Image (cartoon, rainbow, N blue to C red; front, side):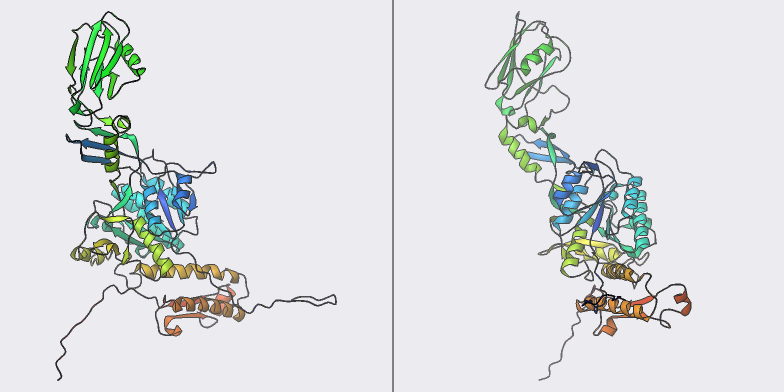
Length: 543
């Protein structure tokens, strides 16, 4: 109470409005995986939870995507044939990119190693430990962990579910490993604990994202890519022609008494003037300083010398056991047409990713546009060409409803005229009447966390009717807003929720003596219309 000791005019502000509950964020994923680097402002940020808002922020702190390598076969008619892709081992960059492309917002990144590291269970468990100390993340993403051994992956998933149960403010989005098409292995390995805090999705997705690559790691082979190879004189040097084999390339050797090698090129014929007994290394040194090489190249095979042999002209033929490949970078200047064609075809190769990153983006979009109480399903995914495996309605029956273990798996399906859709909204506790649906679990998470944080003001306040009234009014106001937006079921407030607090209602005199203030909150959560049944019958003619 104010004390007035000096004559004057005093102003006081009397609070009339009750405390309010601020709704916490519901779709803040935390990605755990391997990155190119982990440096921010010159500081190592490995095994730290770093918040990023855009892909550019991710690249500045964690680098770009790991590079892929390609083997490109060129046909005799100079067209591109088969392309073999060695996909990158680490795909966290692409997962984050896919998340943003599907409407994702702020997220956390926990880098548990670089691209030089192999996958191991201990690193992911360490990442989960780091995540447990963060308050804001609400979704746990383990898309990179699917590359672990099956047993190790399931153990990491169990640890993530245990963290959700302990903190009660987050939810897991799991992927089914690629070779586990019917999810039998996942269902057997995930156990039975804390299943209401996670949801699993299948199959993998063919995205529209392209690979990052270095031109030196794109190898081109085929008769039109390079001419065959002639191994000259005792296997000392190799002459390679990088032009078309249709040019009929030739190599001409003029041997004399001169000690300094020289070269000349006329059309597709390379002339080498060299003295008898000249070391092969000297030929290579002179060739490297020769400016007009054209499409030819000479490489050293060993330390042999050029021995005496008759002068003559030979066609280049393949004397190697395997077909020789040239890199994309080596033909950039000499064969620009083929270079452009290879670049065009390589850019058409698309990345296959687990679905969880795209699903997390769908969660964020649904929460933002409709609310966390709307099931994140029947949502079209962006930057997706389609699932790698088509799932029919018959196939989904066994995934969606599992009478044996009750572990539901949500399907990603492709529909004509609609695109690729998330076609499932169940948690792993698919047979649980209370926690069957993702939207119900996440709605309770949001309300519980928001109410918990807003109730901090009452800690150490008087445990009496005045404080109880403030708590009750604050929570009821919050729930009323959610009910008005359609987040709670019921035609009236009384049908949608209730808040009880007080002596004789939720507390005994002993509870008050022990400093306990107990609030009981009941919610009628809206549930998705998963099965819509239309019943038709004949109406008899009346006139």
